Length: 318
Image (tube, rainbow, N blue to C red; front, side, top):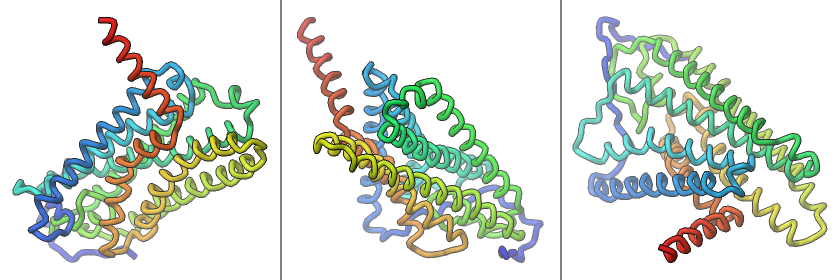
């Protein structure tokens, strides 16, 4: 059963105070700079991927790179929902966030995060079709179908975010307003509710933990089939290229899903590790995505070289 806080309902919380990440005061300036640099690099790296996919005609018509462009767009927005609030925690500015602002942050965090969860599953499905069904791939996965699947992921993510935000903030909040976390997320906010949170905890477990675990399982099954198909490739170069393409995606999926499942399948946990784990998949993963997909993906690197060469030639002709 969820806990019921025995606090007078006459007091209504109108804002929350985000306590942020625990840190020694002497490291405040260093941490401010670290997270500020991470945020800037995340935005620039994902913007570079997005513009590369859009500008290169060999990439922006292929489903794999359409999905990659959408992932970069999601990473930019997810980072913008989370990291500025973390940075604010290392400044003398007020840590208060309005009740509506807290609800909006929770909604967009879960909207974008769950959309990304579904997108990773689509990317695994795309790779499965490309490697295991190469002759039928153009018919099974084309630009139109890819757009429909991406739109479905956005709609499903929006519904998920709406459900979580509505269930969380329909509860009365009448006592302490200090959120012991760096963002307004479900487990931390529910601890402040003045009502039974059992339904919320059950929905969190099912709608987030089980769905994330199911998507992760589907991805692993896809890659089990992919690995089996790759091992059938006779040429070493063909196997290397296939493993390189899929390895980048599997690396990103692992560093995203494992921390997510760790937190939301333990919704009632108050472990100090939760904050560090959450920072990893909300802050570090969006930073790593551009690095992983550019350093391990030969086609993206080739596209960047073509764009750079084209601009260099254009400059010489002027």
